[in-house]
Image 1 (cartoon, rainbow, N blue to C red):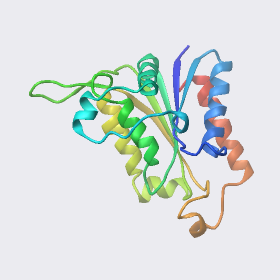
Image 2 (image 1 turned 30 degrees about the horizontal axis):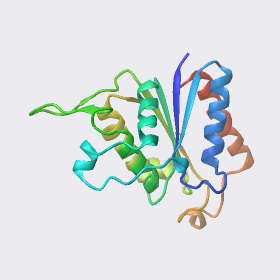
Image 3 (image 1 turned 120 degrees about the horizontal axis):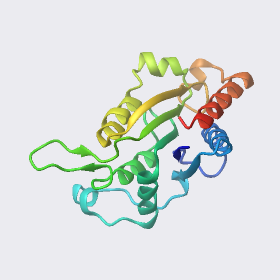
Image 4 (image 1 turned 180 degrees about the horizontal axis):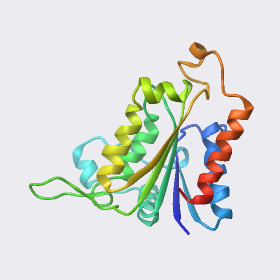
Length: 203
C-alpha cells in the first residue's frame, strides 16, 4: 500500500470546483483500496509569502507549513491538483510550494556544487484544469508551467513525475468564450473515473 499526499491547490474555499471533485474521487478510491491518504488543502492553510532569500533559507516555519513538510516527508506519492491561471498555478499554490519545498526538507545545499535532492524514491502526478482544451496547453503552449514544476521543483528534490493530466474546457478562464463550450457531462464522468482508477492504483 502507498502513502499518498494530495495537494489541493485551488485557492477558492467559498464553493467547490472541479479540482475538488477530482481530488475527492481519487482520495475515496485510494482509501477504499487500502492506501493511506493525507490531504493538504492550500486554501485553508495559513502561511506567509516568502519575501527574501534569507526567509527562504532560514525563516521560521509557521505551524501549517511545518505540518505540511512532515506530510511531504511521510508521503511516497504526491498528487498535485490545481487550476491553470494565466498559464501558471494560482499565486497561493505557488507560494505554498515555495514554503513546502524549502531547503533542508526538499534539497540540501552542497558547498561549491549543485544542490542535491532529499526526496528520492518518491513519485508525483500533476492534475491541471483549464478553460482551454488540454491539447492546446500541451502542444501549443508546451505545458510550460507544468514542466517547470516537474523539472525544477519536483525533479530537483528527487521526486519522479509519473504523469501529467491536462483537463480542458473547465470554464471560468480567459479562453472560455474563445472555445465557446465546456466539457460535457460524459467527459466530466470520464475524468472522474480516470481519477478513481489512479487512486485505486496509488499512482
